Image (cartoon, rainbow, N blue to C red; front, side):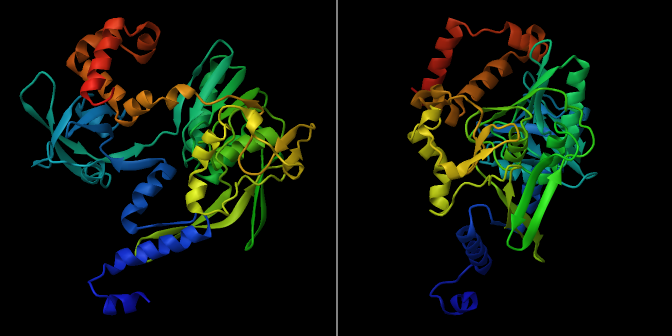
Length: 434
């Protein structure tokens, strides 16, 4: 068919692009989570799962058509040579990049590369007219899964996990051990917005909470017989009460952990019904470097609930689910959610839990409706809050660092004044937000 189109179509055809679009369309007709990855995108798609990438180790943003270093990653190549927050990258390997309409992808292609290779960057630093030159040797840069881990009070620890990668279990254990050393007697485990990742990472983390031989999850598909995953030897958190936070952005591996905790009566789940992604994808790489993630099984919680929500109305309707939940009131009140008896399951201790897609929390917390105002949404969408904060600090960076030497000091002492609030409102107006 494609050869026929190539030979006979009225205009010339990009055969590779046509093939890729055809494959993607075919997979989307199967289910919402089977997908095709072009060869050029495979590495960047795999990096968050692998928990690392190779590059110079900076967090950056493009502000006013200039690449600005937000933060050099601690211990990374850029920090070691002296790159600082607020530095402007104006050239890479002697080629000017400032003011050229460069994109995030362009920057990543320029700065990332094999470990041990070198890249030369030209830096414009605040307070100096000189262009500083740095030769940076690329290295492996960790993509951390733990966003935060600290003690809320003398007894309660808090851990926020953003993804389930190959390094997540080790990161989680290290964070938990530090909190235990600080006297943690109970834990809040935050999985809100965590879109998932590796099954193995979810199983290993759930294992830390559950006693030996406890069922965590099982998978099953037409060509894949049932495979059950059980807790093994004693986990470091088996005796620690836990509350797991979830929301409509918690998916896949997050739902495996939440489902295992809930179905085994191990802790309480707090928040809103999770995303409902319970399809298992198997990766397959092709000779041209592209890959397919094909759904080969479904996840089931220990009580037998399927995590996957229905997708029989098509991919487009499936991805509109969040807005449907918002419009029908599900994110505001649990009273709008009704389950037939066929979707009710019972835990070993007699608690009723619900199937039908996603994990329904034990304690419901409504969505913050402040984020639904047009004004705030516009501020967030246009990045005005972030840019205002950056501009304000960038003008007097030394003064700010002197006054607030670390994030804890800033958090405990900074309060926005009425003058600053008026200044921000004016700033936002100049950026087109009123």
